[in-house]
Length: 91
Image (cartoon, rainbow, N blue to C red; front, top):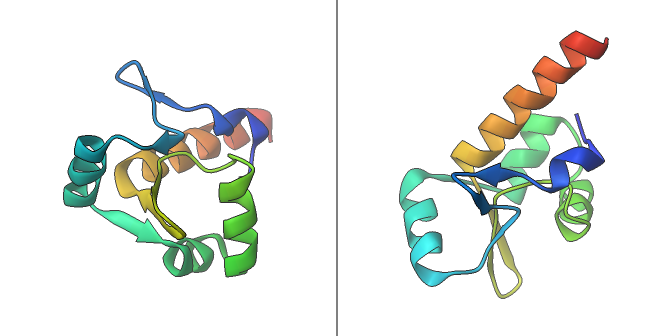
């Protein structure tokens, strides 16, 4: 599930690996986000592992507010679906 290839995720022609624009952040927050704890529960791993993945760019849709990290729910869900399809085709 934690693929290096997923670190560069493009949605609507925009690299959404890290959202830095203020308007894009607002739109992403309105669409829903995951926090580190929620993703750790979803992935069944530690919060530290999620933070490490975020730091090395392995999870798309990162929204940063200083040290606070959130993940765009729609982008993460799409990425997980693509990872699952890839696992089915390669597994």
